[in-house]
Every structure is written in C-alpha cells, then in structure tokens.
Image 1 (cartoon, helix red, strand yellow):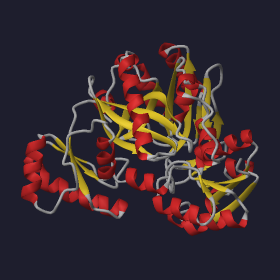
Image 2: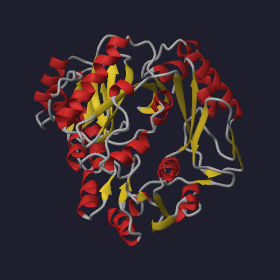
Image 3: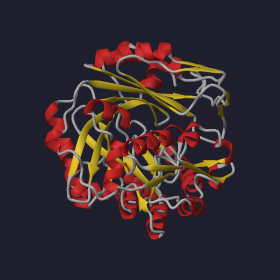
Image 4: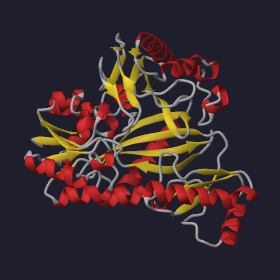
Length: 446
C-alpha cells in the first residue's frame, strides 16, 4: 500500500480524501494556498505545505509547486481530487515522470477523454451511441458549417472540444444565430481553455442527464456501480444528484452499464471514471467521460456500500478491485444537494465569514463539508461549501430525510442555496421524478 499521499486539492474533497487515507493507514500531506492556511483539512493532515498565494493559478494549479511539495515531504503518491489539475494530462505525466504514483487514469486516457471530439470518436468505436453531430472539429468555412448544421437539423449546440462546465457552449435555434454563436463560443473557448476548437451536436429537447460510475484495475477487472440522475442543473452546473436514476427500466440500466464496462476494457481505462449520457426516454446518448472522482460520488457510495476513494487508492497501488460485478448490489435510494455560497434567487456569489454553522444529523444523513464557524469564504475559489446527502430504503424516505436535513442545516453570515433546494424538493413533478436538464429554468426561472 502507498505510505504517504499528497492531496493536491482543497475544500470538501481534500477532507474526503484525507479521511479515506486515514481509514487505510496512509499518511497525508495537505497542500494549501496562503489564504487556506486555517482550513480544516490542513489542520487534520499529518503534514501541510503552503504552495503559493490565494489565486489558484499561483497555487493549486502550479504544477512545479505541487510536485516540489511531494518531493520535500517524501510522499509516494498524489491525489488530485476533482477540478484544478485532476484532468490535466500534462500534470499526470509530470507526476509519473517525477517518480510518484498518480491516483487516477493514465495520461493517455485523460488526454483522449479531455478532448470531447476524441472522446466521442473513441466511444463510437467502442459501441456507444453518441448525439448526432459534426463528427469532428468545425473548420473555418462558414458555408460548410451552415451545411453541416442543416444536415444535423436545428436547433443545434456549438461546443468547445476542450470544454466543460458550460464554457464555450451556445444554443443555436436557426441559421440566423449561427455566425454570432460561433464567434462567441470560439472566443470563450480560447480564453477559458487555450483551445478554440469547436464541434457541433444536435440539441435534444428536455433530456435527462444520466451517468454511470465505473472502476477499473490493473488486472483486467472492471465494474459499473449503477447509475445516477444529475438532471437538476442550472447553467449546466449540477445542483441535485440521485442514485439510482428514477424510472429507468432495469434492462436498459444493465445494458448501458455493461457497454460502459466493455468500453473501459477496450480503451484500457484505469481507476475511477464516469460516463455521462443524455437520455430522451428511449435511448442513451454518450456526451463525455470524466476521468476523476465526481462531486456526486457520495450517492453511489450510499446505495452500493463501496468507498470509491479507497478503491481509487487501492487501484493506484496496483491492487485488484475488492468487488466483482456480481457482488455490486444497489440497495435503497440516495440524494445529494450541493450547497453553494450563493444567493438562492440571483445565484450571485456570497463571500464572507460564517458566523454560525450547525450541520444536520440523524439516520441516513451525511454531510461532506470543510466549513466551520468563523470560516471565511473568499472569491478565489468555487462556491461549493457543503454537500448534504441522505439515504433511505426508497426515494420517498430519502426525500423526507433530505427535507429534514435541509431544515436542520444552519449556515449564518453568508447567503446559501439551501432555500433553492427546498423549493425544488417541494415541487410535485420533482417528487414524482418527472425531471430533465431544463427543469430548474422552467420551474423556477433560473
């Protein structure tokens, strides 16, 4: 087993990784920026290293500083968590070349799946159905692009090949909007990712967002851990996730999971990963693969009893998976609400100091959070401050426990999205599982 791990991240995921390491008897090194020196995960780690000032570009995204911290602390491995450097193939390469274990997929897999065009081509070859689209990067010939759009059929989506999180994404209703959308997407993609490559897809009207969690080891073993529904989103950012996805026939779940495992075997995937799909009520369309642990991995852990972060570490240590597909069993239902430091109506960021914090409790309630009373939320990082996760024997019980947990949750001093989640959970259609990726915009105007 790996003896010491550098946690190259911050916030709740840094604390989550630290706790998994503690369970496995592995020493931890917490990396932090100057402004995060009083963070909970920093205080709980065996060692800590400051890697730069508050701006992420000078600290958490500073590859030489991260690797230097691993060197000076004699660490064995680096866990990138999610965000920051987690899906940076160049970082993964440098980690390995520097003699450390990278807790994640191979650099080649990260590079292939990080480019949406290459990911789609790879998954089509592996037998997964993809959204009809351009099939490759868009060129400079506007007339040719117009012809492609007509063949696909409006409305269409212009997307950044290196993108994610909604950046570089534009909905085009008809030809009159095409040229302007291309210019805006190209500029945003170039600025956000250093890559202006775009591609085009058919816009599916009101699909659900479904994903499949996979784990793959060095010994040819691969399993899928059921599915999740991540349809409740705003601006392509997830707010609520559930496992299992509600109302999908069992034979469709099984077929999709088996195809994902076959695709992993075909491309030689290693570690934890998530296949993301749009589901129109009849068919699943692959859109991307995330080569890291997901924010919402918690709901899968609840319904399977499998610790995904521990499995990541074991896989990186060249140990076989602790379960086979036959041993994966989905029991009960789990829901996660992402609590952000944002105004619940305007969704504007709300930095400041937390004057009082009281987490919820009770049977089937879990909260993953790095905050505490007097903790300061800054403008430098993502606004996610807590994840409230509940579990029940069925969806109704998980929902009831979530409503109770949100009612108990107290975070004073900053605005949070708690009230927004309460509104969503109270909606009759949500309670019936009638959701899609446009639910929030249609129901509450967000």
